[in-house]
Every structure is written in structure tokens, then in C-alpha cells.
Image (tube, rainbow over all chains, first blue to last red; front, side):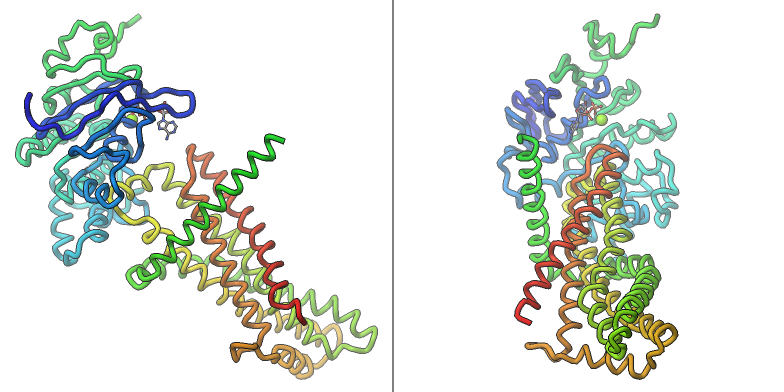
Length: 247
Length: 263
Ligand SMILES: Nc1ncnc2c1ncn2[C@@H]1O[C@H](COP(=O)(O)OP(=O)(O)O)[C@@H](O)[C@H]1O
Ligand SMILES: [Mg+2]
């Protein structure tokens, strides 16, 4: 693919104390592409996403987003860049004392001068997009895990981001909702040319959304392939991950 | 030796973080009006939580001071001074300290637990990513509310403390209420050098104001630093209460020293 590179990892190493999580990770994500990241839990998939949004810095190597080095980027540019990005948190990360709707509204209320009515309209639109038309006034503790996650997705999308990072978008959802989220991710990517990185361990998800799939294991990429090829791969690590041996 | 050095370094780092957080809040003081709804919530929740405790404790402390000093004073025939002693000790020391301790235990701990829970459930990271200014959104309203609550509750506490002392003076020591309150009000008449309110009152309030800020900064900083799940939240809460009470005691001494050394 010769499309423009939006996200680039150059030989990134990241350790927490003695525990090395990313160990020479190199990766490119192109404009408009949907990249799925698979891997056993605890290998650093979430850590990878956090590098892209600038919450974590590599110990060595570089992470470039839109050509900007996330280690040296000035705070002002980082904020501007983040406004063009959406992040779906693995556990939703909703603010507990705000209603679902106000959670989604939060970035608009904090960073724009839009009228209340317009904010409510946009929020409601995003809530409907994630199939939650009636939750505006519900408080997060009243919602199920899957609903909180979809509210979090609505919040990630409310600012019309160009890059969206999804941390396990369909874990904890029932199969039907899970598939509708997959379709939504694909639709967003196609219609709005959003660049997406999707962390998942569901083959059903990569079949629908992915242009490319990578397997992250032991801190670096084991296989980088289109979804059909990935699923059919005979690579031993991929095989073990997708079809763990039974005993 | 190494352990002592490490904990000393940790202490310096922590203090640095707290000072920085305070400065960051000061730089955002102009957001106060924008945050009025959040400040209102904090005032309401905090006030409701501690008002009755402050009143109860202050009332009984006033009674205790009155009884203790009253017994001694009547021995030397000076029981008409009870009002003075109770009023001065409530306004200068007891009132601010009682209120600060209760606020640290009830409001500071809740605040650290709340922000700590947000930290470990990634809500704080989420706010950061959404470019929500956390100092302005979370810390400023809490600090402002505590800085207002602490002196306000102190005034109320002082008042009921003095009243409590008066009741004891009358019933246990045979000092008339009129005499008691005359001497109490008289005692608080020493005017301030710069400000027209009585010195003992405004210094007490200044102390409470500082204590309120200290409790807010220490608790917010402990909460936002939290890591390590539910256990981490517990640790942060404990550290917030412990550190803010220690800091209140230390600062109290220095402020007393600074304001009263010449007299
Ligand atoms: N802030 C942190 N401090 C210490 N260790 C961390 C931190 N974040 C992640 N880790 C560790 O990094 C490893 C990878 O975590 P993560 O990226 O969340 O895994 P996953 O691939 O399941 O998303 C885990 O072992 C985790 O304990
Ligand atoms: Mg993860």
C-alpha cells in the first residue's frame, strides 16, 4: 500500500520496571486503513494504543503520529492532535457522576462553544449510532458493561475524529450487538475515511473490519497479513493463538 | 540509611507535586465562574457530610474547655474569665483545628477515594485524551469548595463552642450567662492590625482557609496519583488523611508562631 503513513512505530521498546512489554515494535498504519491488532492478553496491545495517543512514551525508538514525534511534540500540538483522535477504552472509562449523555457531551462542552441544543442533538445522534437511543439520562452504574462500552464509543466519535483507536470494542457484548459494532467500525472507516486501529481477539471482528491484521506477541509483531491470509496462516504462533491445542 | 534517604527523596518529590498542583490551580482561578455548578455540588456534598459533626464536636469541646479551666479559675476566684478563655481558645486554635481534622477525615478521604477510583478505572486518562483540563475540571472545584467550607464551618463551630462553654459555666460553675458572654465578646475585641475584624477571629479564619486548601491539594494529589486497583485506592485514601492532618498540625504551629510571637 502506498497510502500516506498516519501512525508509525519505529523500533519501540517499552518496559515497566523490569518487565519488557514492547521490544522493538515497528509498525505503519496508513490513511483510511483499519488495522487489527491481535495477541494474547497482557502482551501490550493496550500499551501500544496508549503510545499512539501520547499517554505513554517509548523508552527507546519513536512513535510518529501524523509525522509528529510523540515524545517531543509540544503540549499545544498534542492537544490539537488528540482532538482529531478518538479512543474507545477497554472498560469504558466513563465519568461516574455524569449521565451517559453528559459523558458523551463532555468533550464538546469542554472544548467547543456549541449551544446546548446543538450539543444534545449531536450526542443523541451518536448514541443512536451505537444503538442506545434511550440512555441520555441514565447514570453509568445503571448501565451494563456492554452499554457503557458503547457509550464510550459514542463519546470517542462525538468529535468526528479522523483516527480512532478501539481497545477491544466487542469484548463483553452479546454476538448481535458485537456484530453491529463491527459493522459500525467498518462503515465509519469507509464512509469517513477514518484510520482505525482495533485491538481485538475475535476472528469474527477481523473478518468484518480489518484491512490488515498483526499478531503482537512477546513485544513485537509476529505476522502482518490481510485478514483471510492471517486466519489461514500456518505460522505456529498464530495457529496457537487462533486455535489453541486442546488436551 | 538508604531507606531514610529514599523516603526523604519521596517526600520532596511529593511536596513538589503538591506545590505544582497548587500553582496549576492558581493559574486557572479565572475558571472559577465557569465551574460554579461543580463548586456548588462540592460545597453541598461536603457541607452536608460534616456540618453536624463539626457542630457536635465544637459544642462538646467548648463545654470541656469551660469545665476544665472553670474549675481552676474558680479556685482562684477568677471564674468571670471563663468566657474569655473559651472564646479565645475556640477562635484561635480549637475551631480551625477541629474543623480541619473533621474535613480531612470525612471530605479529604472521600475526595481521594473518588479521584483514586477514577485513576485506576482509567477515567483520568480518558479525560486527558479528551483534552479535558483535569486541574480545572476536577481539582479547582474541590479546592475552592474546601477553601470556603473550612472557614465557614469554623465560624459555626466557634459559635456553638462558645455557647456550649456558656451553658457549662452557668450550670456547673454558677457563672451567669451575661457575665460569660460579656467576657467572651470582650476577649474577641482586640482589633486586627490591618483588618477591622478582631484579630483572633480573622487569624483563626485565615488558618482554616489555609487548612482547607491544604486538605484539598493533598487529597487531590494523592487521589490522582493512585495506581494498583482497589488496594491502591485504599492506600491513597489513607495517605491523604494522614498527610493532610500532619501538614495541618505543622502549618498550624508556624502560623501561630508567625502571628502571635510578639505578644
Ligand atoms: N502503567 C503501567 N504500569 C506498569 N505495568 C503496566 C502498565 N500498563 C501496562 N502494564 C503491563 O504491561 C503489560 C501489557 O499490558 P496491556 O497492554 O494492558 O496488555 P493487553 O495486551 O492485554 O492489552 C501487562 O503485563 C501490564 O501489567
Ligand atoms: Mg488490553
